[in-house]
Image (cartoon, rainbow, N blue to C red; front, side, top):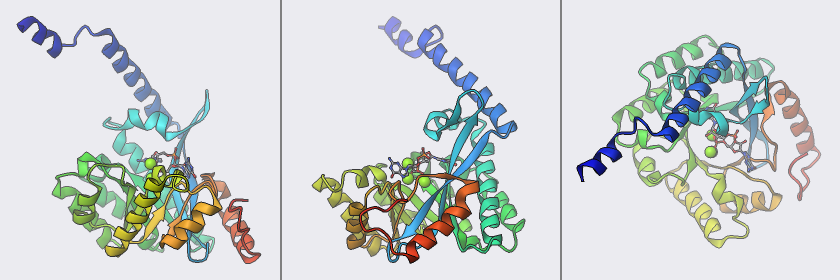
Length: 292
Ligand code: C2E
Ligand code: MG
Ligand code: MG
Ligand code: MG
């Protein structure tokens, strides 16, 4: 009936929706203030090569150092940021800060890379490649090939030429592009065909149970096979055990990242960690325990 139709279309008086909006608005205000007060912080998780367990670099992972409650993980606040006025400014802060950290590592004589998570909306922001270029220019001694942009499969990238255009421009600046959480989106295969990428990251949900689940193991194996056919290196996320690492090595996986190596660590601990890892590697890694 017309009345029912009306009820479905108009939600002015829906108390739940109103509460939801209010919570979102309030969270956004708090997050905006947090950005002004420099309450965000990047942690860094090591990524190591499978061939010799040498350290390749680190993925930058944002944390919110909320005065009232301590460290808040991105899963708790990024959903509020997404599709808001804060998405681009926060993304810019991450980009700038991660490149700054990479520069300090390089100045300390470390040959490392940094991987930066970029949302689709940020990537498609009109001035994205312009300020990316300006950040790189402000560190002229930095090799852009040490910077990887991690892009999530998302519907926003789906039928846009713009994504392709921006990624191509980034690669022409010398940056690397990784497809993050590969296999969890619904159009992984078409991205493989249409987007200019350098690296595939297998989502941790497939790695987690691969030793017990033949189907998860089959997926991991197939993704590695597929990546090899496209001549893209593969990084497996969420590697927690030495058994998983050995299995991934046998499958031809190129890099790993996970609690089995180290959790994300504060920026101030990165150089010390890199040093200790090198020493441990020289002494021979424990076959059954990866992490310190
Ligand atoms: P992601 O990019 O796929 O990052 C991997 C996530 O897995 C991180 O969670 C990391 O701490 C966690 N992880 C790493 N190794 C293991 C492991 O062995 N076991 C388990 N169970 N988890 C592991 P985190 O830091 O909570 O980040 C979650 C997601 O939030 C990220 O997934 C990424 O999509 C997003 N994110 C984080 N930082 C940023 C950022 O600066 N910008 C944007 N746009 N997104 C970010
Ligand atoms: Mg990532
Ligand atoms: Mg991921
Ligand atoms: Mg993820």
